[in-house]
Length: 172
Image (cartoon, rainbow, N blue to C red; front, side, top):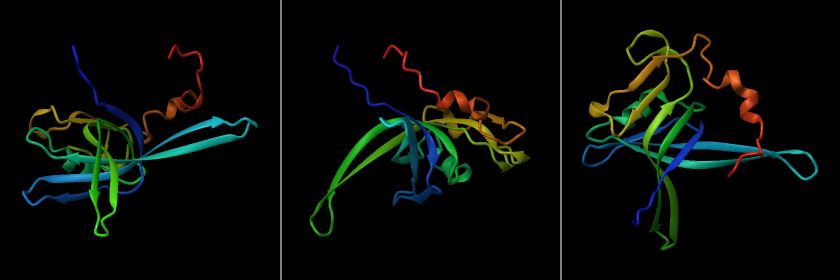
C-alpha cells in the first residue's frame, strides 16, 4: 500500500494579530505567524533558546468558518494548537527573482489562552479557554467550547515546571 501523510502539529504563540481578508470570490482567509521555541543547555552549561516562526493560513470552508473564528478570538501573544499540512510555494517576483514560501494550511485548531471579555455565547467573563474548531465540523460551529478557568491563565500554568523538563529516556 503506498500512502503518504503530510501532517503538522504545532503549539505556539501568535507573533502578531491575525490578518483577515476576502478573496475575489468572497471566501475569507486568515494568516498569522506562530512562534515555537525550544531551549537546551549548551556545552558550557549556559541556557540557549531557539524560536522558529511558522506562517499559518486558515480558510473558511463550506463546513467551517475557521477564518472568522481566528479573526474574532485570536490576538497577539495567544497560545494556540494548530494542526494541518505543510505547503511550499514558489513564484517569480517583479524583479524576476524566484521567491519561496512555506506555509501551514490549518485544518484544526484549539485556543489554549484564556482572556477576559465576551465568550462565544456573548456572555461577559472569560473567553473560551479551549475552543476546538475543525474543517470537519458541520456549519462552522465552535465545538467543545467551555468557559476558561477562573484565573484566566493558560491551561498549562499548573504544570509549567513539567513542560520545561527534558526527558531523555524517551524510546524515540
